[in-house]
Amino acid sequence: MINKELLIIKRQIIKVLNITQVKREQYDHNYFKTLQEKLEKLLADFENGEVNKNILQGSVKAYLETGVSESYSDSLIKELDKLEVMLTFPS
View 1: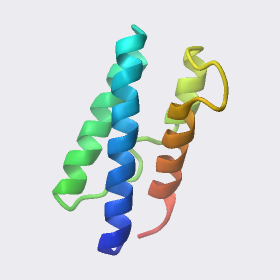
View 2: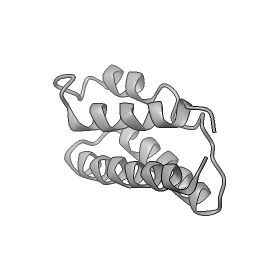
View 3: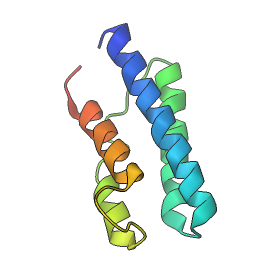
């Protein structure tokens, strides 16, 4: 991946991490703790030049299964889905 693509992905990771932190404060659910840990690891890996494309695979589905989300327009669903898609493109 070129540096511009990595920067866009890094910004998306931070965006999803921020949304996750807000959700974690609103809801007492282990999903948010686990997702935050995965996002923090992904961000650290990116900063070290590593790309783990599979770490978030299935995260949107898992979020929907928690029952916390009220609709598909939930900001975490939209932004997490974008991030999952970004990570699935070949480098």
